[in-house]
Length: 98
Image (cartoon, rainbow, N blue to C red; front, side, top):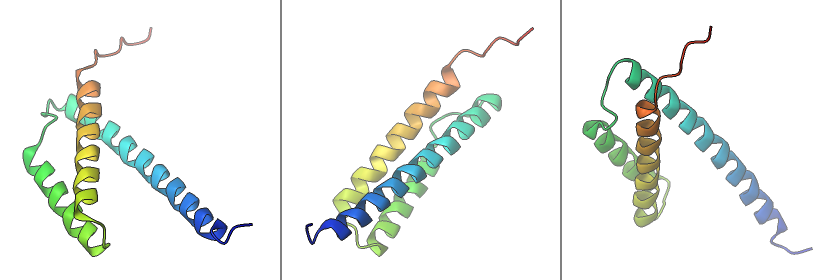
């Protein structure tokens, strides 16, 4: 048994929680896409993107994360979220069931 097992177990638990939270985040993004579609709101909201970036950089700094990691993570999440919203907003409306 390695002296690293306890650390690795903690990392595995944190990774699981991160993935669960990311799944929850993308679930909310799906709800946002539906709302935008129903209300004909543009997917890209530049002001919101700026707010999210600023919050990430601030909170990443407070959490002592490397700035390059925080910036890359933020960009990855924004890009993936916008792509998901765009796909959902543009998909054809489903036919009502008879």
